[in-house]
Length: 250
Ligand SMILES: C[S@@+](CC[C@H](N)C(=O)[O-])C[C@H]1O[C@@H](n2cnc3c(N)ncnc32)[C@H](O)[C@@H]1O
Image (cartoon, rainbow, N blue to C red; front, side, top):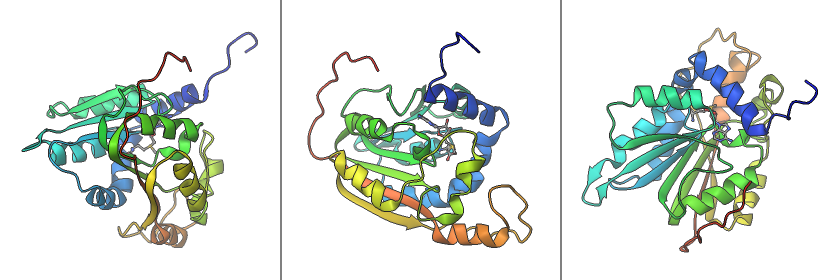
């Protein structure tokens, strides 16, 4: 419409993922992402008392898995914060998490994480990072909110080296990045992360013989996609404290 201000990338993501949330797709994603997320969570080596961020938390099922692992222990009372650009996903996540007293859900963008600096011991982000319009800014924000020696775990199914994921680029209603593993490793190092590594996390759930969805041509493709697996990027923040930001308005 002439005269209307253009919609920002984050607003576009908010509209699209609010639609997903209203269709129940936030909850549905647990079935699709659980196997690879559980394998990732095992690698996170979580301990009671730790502070964890679930970035792009959707309906919050993984946030609750994390919360059970960091709850109460000798190191104190662990806490998990879920952040998502979709306020409707956040609403669903809060609704389903009423029994948890160590979980909090906050509406906000990866590009301006609504939290203080040097806070989180661990960060998990499942199937979300390729949507961030400005991945550089998101990494700068992650670096800021992570504690010194904090550990970052970014799990993505859409990346250049899994050719079966690339058809999603045209099917999704919002723009996405399809970088390669090598590009992501470089990006993390450019943002001063240490101990940067990549792993492949295959999805070992059984594949039905009669696949008829739109994301793959057939069951054989889906099986191959799952065998190649998701890309897990792991990195650490060096042992330094990030100064408080100034008053830059983005
Ligand atoms: C495919 S869903 C995955 C949700 C959840 N992690 C799961 O596995 O069920 C992607 C999620 O990332 C969120 N997201 C996309 N862009 C975002 C951004 N810039 N900042 C925060 N969240 C974002 C979406 O709203 C959506 O909930």
